[in-house]
Length: 508
Image (cartoon, rainbow, N blue to C red; front, top):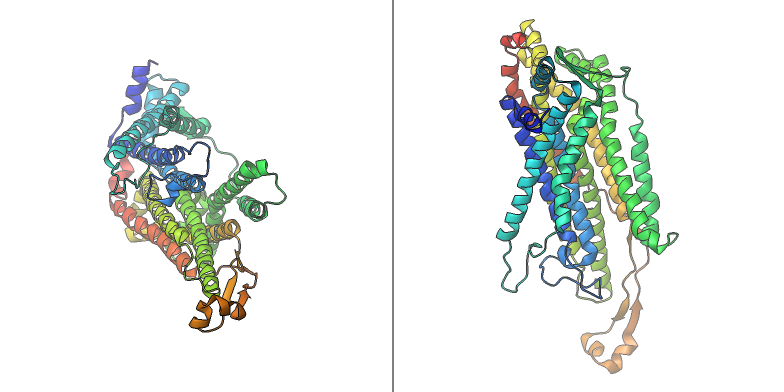
């Protein structure tokens, strides 16, 4: 098959196929912007001879201080998780129609390998268009936002660019990864002239083995980070790279365990609901949860990852708030007027904004998945309506199917995120400030000759305080995630009437 023919076939299709390509490209553009922003932060040059010297041309301490740039870049890279999950959901949009189109290619004489290359080319090309658009937006935004203030300071690192090799790697690497992921997902798919056949293994309910990943992730944080904070037990060279790698890998394992564990939660919830249900809507939802429990892992992946990150950020905020309060109290005890540095609390405001953006993006992916599921099963829903099942019952079954696994999965995600945040931040130490206090009046204390007789040394007691559980923030996070599910269910049900028309029974 010639490359031009392959390209033309990859771009062929209906309006649904066009929407899938556009949404996949948009997701790739958002991921490109996040990665390029992280690389730009890392590209800020260090001062020769002094690697800890601050970059005085920026207003924000996150960019000025070299020790904080790595964390800032890591936070930006975390935003790619919900974006890539959104891309995965968009790639499934209109899957039945695409399967029929691929079967038509086989009927016209294409080989299975050629059909697979058409599907891979579609995803890779859409991602390439998205990464090129993301690069153009990044370069254009760099010129538009380069506005120094009256002191000549910059709000963003618009004066630097990542190396050209890094730009090329991002623009070409993301489409290659997307194409490789598509080829990997199609390894169990056989396209025949009569349709697409997916080979599956023995059908059985999911097992709770993802709990092991959660346990390993928590153990990595609890067991490794104290060594990093204390500086004992780990060689300096290893502590700089090995320990952070173990910590980040543990966090990723915990998030992966939460996402994969949603399949087991869906299956168990479906069994319980089937045992206790007395209404048609709940019975339909229970059977659907038991028939396809992994749909929850695919649907809620981005949302649960954002919830884990948000709960961890809430635990970090509680740590910084307690540390700020302890330092203010100790400064007051030793007679110092200066308060604690609120820099970290202000930084957490930016982290909370990133969490809100991640939840919003995840809600978009959830909406795409819900609509795609309704459209893909429209013949089954139309058959139910034609058989006498009220459309409202079908709508309630879809709502039950989304909410029943979502509530426990969100609770598990918040718990795991809180424990990870506690492990990463650790307790707050007291007794770090000491000073001489004069117990006499202002006149005696102001005179150096008499002050020494009334001075005493104040040393606060050394203790390890554990921050309180941030119940308010956790409640807001859980309510926001559950509200996102409710909103997407409500919007998705708008497509139910058109998808349950009797005419859908005649579709092929």
